[in-house]
Image 1 (cartoon, one colour):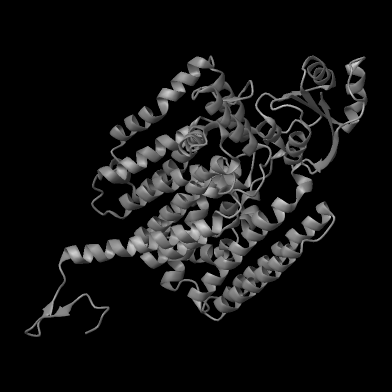
Image 2 (cartoon, rainbow, N blue to C red; image 1 turned 135 degrees about the vertical axis):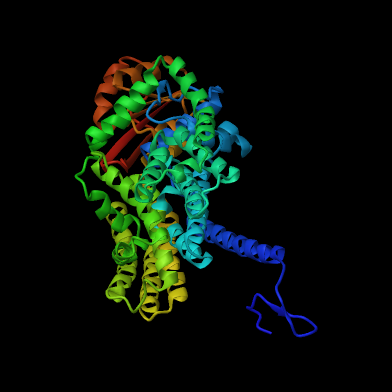
Length: 566
């Protein structure tokens, strides 16, 4: 008897079809196995380094400190960084980070890696929903390819390790797109409560995390599909009236509360200054012309991006196929919108990366990509090239900023380069499964090289950590009054305490003079002004420690002097 057959043989030799329940169980078991494999691989790729990578400036430090203050103050409505309101983004990610810290048992004493867990969880959810979309539009094999490729991209490797909004936001977009894909392939366009509940819950959570982004991406997908079909059946299958009410029930209570508490300042800053400001002009030196997202994605979506040109060409040829068109409707309108926005950051187009992963998964599974396609060998050669250039490039950067080479980093670069060359050769010869496994291993090796070996050891670029270590080594009491002059990075607040005074030389001198136990951290160029402001105070004229390091934003070399009393 053929073990792969759906039929067996009865005692009289007649064929016997297994009951539907057995088929359903085997189908569910196949999905469960794939989901477990994807979860394990994603965690293996993305979890290392989450605790060893120091706190990054500036965005991550702002998010982490604001979430930390929620636990310190018990105020879960008004978002604050020290005394400053944080009204650029809604409250969602702060709630999730603070709740994670509370549930971890650490509460306000939670270490940095606890605040990063929501990003890791968001990345895992993104990968699992990518699989679900691939399996819905194609086969489970296509979904597995898509999930593995999305988990191995450089951009999600970074976002999963950083306590910001983007990984969890991407999870809400993927949840919504998964629900849309399920509705799209349903020829009857029947209303499904679980599917629609997922869609509208993702909408509500997405609004609380980053305002209109999740509704925008999903809404553009619906508009594109409806325009092609000349029908609104996809929209009506989502139970829009009930769904919008549910979405508003999730998002409106906090929006009303923060509007009242802030006197409308939240909407002025979040909508007027942040969102509309980014559309009209390049904020925070991140302005760029249209097309930059596409160019940057060639690097940030690596290794997925090496197959992107071939996949896009093939997709355009088969754009009328329903599965391909859904992916185009998901990615293309939103990408055009973000290219038109003046402010550009690599993470803006992260919600469209899984669409490309699913496209490549479908084409690999169906034979639309492979050795028979023109340009295949050239494309897969960039896996080897990327592994070599990035691996040794990280080591060169380490040598420049640290002044010495890391033997662990060099060994890691050699291993990664070897994996990259192996992946290129296997894929070029048509050994798809082994080639993809080697590709994922090369990507994982680069992540280990960067986030576990080189970046944590690059002490020159983690000045806030060095300042915190110096304070701990020189302080004369448990809770000194700390002031800092000439270095205002947000990471200093999380590392040195919410009560740290970021001020000028005269303010630091006043704090130092009036407290019995105090620490003043002063930039070398402000030393004279600080000592002059101290006047006749009985303090040692020389610093207790000198700390040198670079500002991660701009890499400016700084020398900080630490004064301590008593």
